[in-house]
Length: 292
Image (cartoon, rainbow, N blue to C red; front, side, top):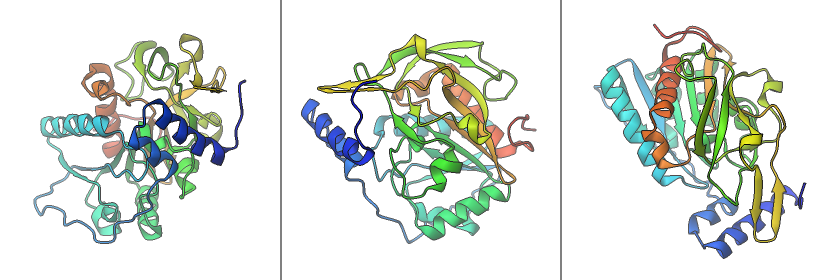
């Protein structure tokens, strides 16, 4: 199983090791994240018409900058093509009842760290429980610890524990479990692609989520190995990677895919995200169902 280190010590050690390996200053944000919260909300465009989607990209932890920019370009293209209004911001104060009410879904694209204050957290939770839609992408579920416990426990539905290093990006096989859901019905039963593969403390299936796709651990090397540290990240035969769930009357979709910028030019992955957002915006069902 390799060396095991307590969570707090592992984070500090990881930051030191990443700096020794390449001294990427972004790595330090994993160890020393910011806790700044926005207090002045942005003014939304008066012409923001429904249907509309909010894309939120604030990072107080690790920043997947290239993926954020590539994803924003994709979402803007989708919105233009489908006739949606789109508003993108890194201002967490957009999460209040009046502003959230103007959107059919909220996309948290690569959000990391402690980004909302208590009132903003309560507003997002109330929005979802009252019937709003949510899509979380990759880094939104990729923090080793959370200031807001509801985020891993409910909003995302799983606690991230790590991803492979040595190598970090690998080709692997995804097994599509539900080919009837709008987000995955364009896929074959198996989908081979490259990414940074997340592992979680336990399968979110235990929390009652609806799993759309799982990861075949025999198809890649789920090991974190850097300098002298080696950690086995295998979850076993049930390794969900894309799922949905109900949050009150609302709909939540999470995909752990999407670290590389080039993933957003990958047709199958782009289609997954497009249909996930449409489902979150329009579906009358929580775990399954077609948008009108």
